[in-house]
Image (cartoon, rainbow, N blue to C red):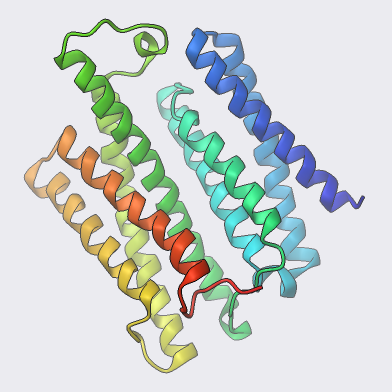
Length: 275
C-alpha cells in the first residue's frame, strides 16, 4: 500500500466517523458527538486536501484527465462550505448535508479512477482555476441551500400543523437561520456559477472553435443558470423569503445532480466520463 492510498483510506474512515457522529449526535442531542464529528471532519478534510495536492503534484497528467480528481474536488468543496457555515453559525446541523455528500463523492472518486475526461493541456490552468473551481464551490453552496430548504419546509410544516417537536427537531436551527443559509448560499453561489459558465464557454471556444454547440451538458447547464438567476433575482429584487426560494433551489440542485450523474456518464457530450 502506497502512502497515497493510505491517505485515501484514512480520509474515508474519518469522513465516515464524522458522518455517524453528526447523525447520532443530532438525534440524541449529544454535543460531545457533535464535537467529535467536527474533529473527524477536520482531520478528513486535512488529509483530503493533502490527497488532492499529492494527486496534482505526483500524477498531474493522469489525474487532471481522470474522473477521480473532479468528484474528489467536489466532495472537498462541500466540506469547505460546511466549515464556513459552522464558523458563522456554530451549528453542526448542516454537516448532515455536507458530510455524507463528501463521503459519497470521495468514494465515487476512487471508483472513477479509470474514467477519462477530455482536457486540452494548454487550458488546464484556466479550466481548473476558473471553470472547475468556481462551479464546484457553487454546487457545494447549492447543496447547502437545498439542505437548508428541505429543513425549512419540514420544520415550517411541523410548526404550521402545531405538531409536537421531538428529539432532533427541538434542536434544529430556527426557520430564520435556514432561510439565511438559503439566502447567502444563493447570493454567493450564483455569481460563482456565472463565472464558471463564462470561463467554460471561453474554454469551449478555444477547444472546439465555438462557444456553444448544443451539447446536452451545455443545454442543461443553461437551464440551471436561468433557474438560478431567477431565484437570485427574486431574492435580491423581490425579497423572496421562506418556502418559495427553498423549493426552487431544491429543484435547481436536483437538476444539477441529474446533469452530474446522468449526462456525464450516459449521454454523449464533450463533458462525458469515459472508461
